[in-house]
Amino acid sequence: MIIGLTGGIGSGKTTVANLFLEFDNVAVYFADVEAKNLMNTSSTIKSKITKAFGKESYINNQLNRSFISNLVFRDKDKLQILNTIVHPEVKKHFQNFIINNQDKKYIIYENAILFESKSNLICDFIISVFVDVNTRIKRVLLRDKFTREEAKSRIKSQWLEDKKVLQSNYLITNYDISKTKNQVKRIHNILTKKAV
Ligand SMILES: CC(C)(COP(=O)(O)OP(=O)(O)OC[C@H]1O[C@@H](n2cnc3c(N)ncnc32)[C@H](O)[C@@H]1O)[C@@H](O)C(=O)NCCC(=O)NCCS
Ligand SMILES: Nc1ncnc2c1ncn2[C@@H]1O[C@H](COP(=O)(O)OP(=O)(O)OP(=O)(O)O)[C@@H](O)[C@H]1O
Image 1 (cartoon, helix red, strand yellow):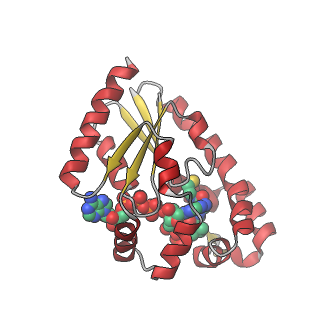
Image 2 (cartoon, rainbow, N blue to C red):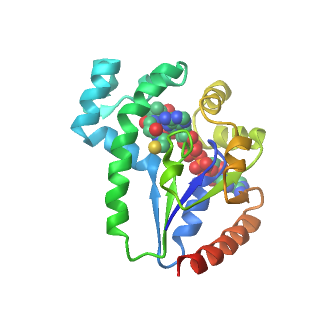
Image 3 (cartoon, rainbow, N blue to C red):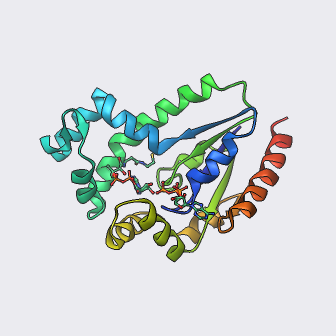
């Protein structure tokens, strides 16, 4: 059983995904982490990115993230090009992860842009993590070196939260972390029964 776990930047998906990782028999795939690894290791992705965005895309064989983010979060067409290069490879990589984790009760697929990349289509159920946009911006500014404008430009490149929540099966509101943990336990109990 594949469970999509999504939410906009700074909503707390990774925090929630790590809570699911504490249960036995649950595997978690962190799509953004794997995408970043693949962008540095896959020769297919590297040559396509270099062709699309130029040689400056890589420094010492590592993705030049500030260069790419300055391009793609200001220009929807460029973001679309990047997504078209990266996402098919992530999807292939995830298929292998599924094969290697067939013994698990269920697999959590954590992805900031689950709906935007149409990865919701491979999920049996979807969980959205939600906090209001001002809280998200505050948390992102605390966590990253982003400016407020950089955080906002990423938010603009993602779907509105309402649209995601309406298409989700479960909602986790992530303010007080102890309440978040209770919601995770409740959903885990439901999913464990469904997986039998
Ligand atoms: C564009 C890149 C190089 C910018 O790197 P940078 O270090 O500045 O930001 P970082 O990776 O920490 O991303 C911050 C947040 O931006 C959002 N974000 C990342 N990629 C995307 C995207 N393709 N579309 C919309 N939002 C995105 C996520 O909420 C993410 O947590 C990087 O985000 C990237 O490699 N993105 C492509 C991989 C991808 O699509 N990941 C999303 C899930 S597969
Ligand atoms: N309930 C909470 N209370 C306070 N801070 C929190 C809470 N949940 C998460 N955070 C913090 O908020 C920040 C964003 O959380 P997290 O990295 O889990 O979000 P995310 O949705 O995965 O973001 P991104 O899309 O950018 O990867 C982190 O610094 C995290 O420690």
